[in-house]
Length: 138
Ligand SMILES: CC(C)(COP(=O)(O)OP(=O)(O)OC[C@H]1O[C@@H](n2cnc3c(N)ncnc32)[C@H](O)[C@@H]1OP(=O)(O)O)[C@@H](O)C(=O)NCCC(=O)NCCS
Image (tube, rainbow, N blue to C red; front, top):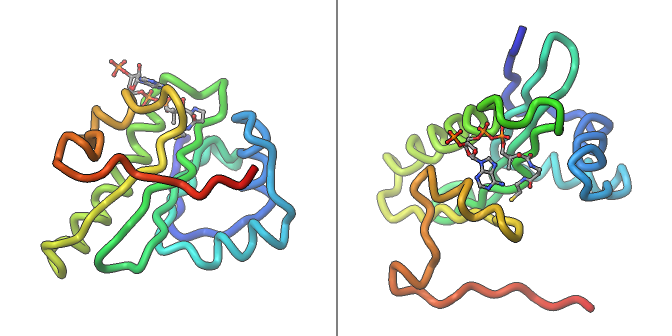
């Protein structure tokens, strides 16, 4: 049976998902700090087995970033990713009631933009913002 846990921290599960979607995991201390500093998260299980995850980071009121949407390969294309996104977006709607100026971003991986467009995300240039940048590390 599919079930969801909110704000549940399990570093091993998080790192396992990172591995299974092909990203390669962080050291456990790094993942633990990242998860502890997460504003809101959704972990999805099939019975006891972790199958998906998504989280929101940010200042909890003005800027929120959706990150780390992951569904393990054998469960992809079964609307688990959609369920995760809808739960995260419900949380952003709650915050928007407190602050109508809230901005919600998503860190879309290359070629994943179409998935996020389904939920109303657009390229920043479409709403007259700059392209968006990331600090180059190598
Ligand atoms: C991307 C991902 C989260 C989607 O989750 P999912 O559970 O497989 O997606 P869903 O079943 O909810 O798909 C919903 C719709 O989005 C579409 N979609 C799914 N992945 C897509 C992608 N990578 N690009 C474009 N569209 C995509 C599906 O075709 C589906 O369309 P339909 O309703 O017309 O059939 C999942 O495939 C995944 O974890 N991939 C590896 C990790 C990753 O890349 N995460 C995103 C990082 S930014």
